[in-house]
Length: 319
Image (tube, rainbow, N blue to C red; front, side):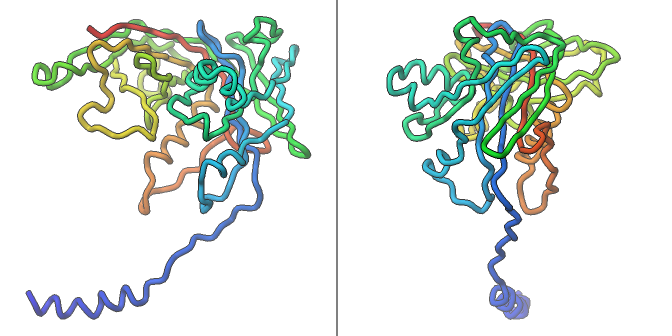
């Protein structure tokens, strides 16, 4: 055994003595406008809103100060259905926090920012204020196309999305944990769905637990209907949570007895689906031996997503 070690030692020493630090080439040219915006149809739909940031080199060091610098302020953001056009108003949550912390956190939770320290990160959103006040002339409708225009200085980006028909869940229920009765405190959520036949449909699933924000399913929130077109079937729904949450292998994906659970089932169009499918694939396959997939976007002249969705919410209490 020792002779093999003596044989390998010179090669190991040579390997490390020849090793050089690899610094990947930075192909970053200039910041691009990055868009995350949505227009929703549903009983508790938010007004159309858009978050604008600047892209940055992946070799950059991030800090709260650096993140705050990424938000794009004072842009002209317009949403139109081809007939009616509204201009969105920029709201920064630090400003809201200064006079109403409850409202600031309510807005943060509604757009999936629960747990973010609003005192450190000044999150800014462009929103149709008229929808909050009940005075907006732009009313989201199923089957319509909606056009986004963003003007920031000399740069203009555009995007188009549609709000597809909603395919409601037939039922939502829960079953005991696979290790029941040893584990009698956790349950698995399930749902039944009847897909519309002979049509390409695209789904995105979110969950909400008690007073937590609504979270998309981690790593796999979207699907098409290629393997179940026109079929009626049952499927499990994992508990959504932020990527920054601690991972507990024993409770991951499950809910607790006593929880009030809301399942949101949304239908989205193909471009919206492909954005999340490619993004989630990249997030889930990071590592030195994985294949990079370009994240698809419907933003012309920039990055990100402008997405329409129709959704239904289903709430039950786990006993």
